[in-house]
Image 1 (tube, protein in one colour):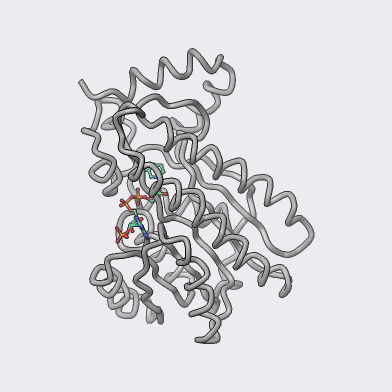
Image 2 (cartoon, rainbow, N blue to C red; image 1 turned 30 degrees about the vertical axis):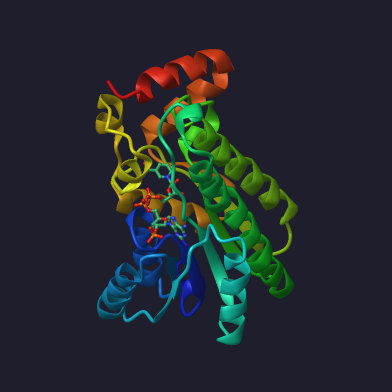
Amino acid sequence: MALAPLTGRTAVITGASSGLGVDFARELAALGCRLVLVARREDRLKALQAELKEKHQADSVVVALDLTDAAAPQALFDLLKQQRLQVDVLVNNAGFGLFGNELDIPWDKTRQMLMLDIVALTHLTKLFARDMVKRGSGYILQVASIGAYQPSPTYAAYSAAKAYVLSFGQALNYELRGTGVSCTVVSPGVTATEFLQVSGQKTTWFQRITMMDSAAVARIGIRAMLKRRYSVVTGWINRLLTLTTRLSPAAANAAITYRLMKNA
Ligand SMILES: NC(=O)c1ccc[n+]([C@@H]2O[C@H](COP(=O)([O-])OP(=O)(O)OC[C@H]3O[C@@H](n4cnc5c(N)ncnc54)[C@H](OP(=O)(O)O)[C@@H]3O)[C@@H](O)[C@H]2O)c1
């Protein structure tokens, strides 16, 4: 793996206060990056900032921001411009899911999820990727999910949002060919983070036996990004699942996913 190109480069990581975002930050700090850590919980970001300084001598900037606010991506971009920070890596990781029958989930919650998982991700990508293309170099990592590969009852809007991320990222990567900038999509399966707590789902037997470690998932994502791969599914069980769903009819996939996801 090419390690040298990231030394001294700046990486923006959204959702760096918990779970995968923390591990993406640790990976990139170990590779010599300066970090911009973004999320709402500033205390958590500051604790990570101190850890990265101590363990990797990595400098970082903490930006406490609610990315469901439509003005937040532009505000982040402008702030980093003011600070003369040139962004070489963008990890669009912030996201959450909502578990339940779609009609039982209040619209405002779904709207916030779509603002974060789709709108903020797309806006941040456009802002930072344009600068990267002008300079002729850069890496973008979009965090999707294996939920992107099939309709997922009980996570209907979330899995549809992640299908958007997968499709958007792969299409953009093609448009970026020859620019020196790449867009990689990483699709994790169930990973040990705060995701289920936030989504409101009790861990199912299927999730318990397939759950991956967050550090391992982050490492797979960063390696794929550095190899400029267009897409990666984390872990062999998840790869097998996405392969199986591609070969089965959508109606069967929806029914199987429902059985694997439902609580009790
Ligand atoms: N864990 C899994 O099983 C799994 C599987 C597939 C895909 N994913 C995806 O992986 C990504 C990371 O999730 P995770 O599993 O690490 O979950 P997590 O532990 O809950 O972390 C989510 C991160 O997103 C941030 N975030 C949430 N709302 C935000 C907002 N309004 N503005 C800014 N940041 C916000 C959170 O920070 P604050 O709360 O401090 O704002 C937190 O840092 C997500 O895109 C998720 O969809 C997770």
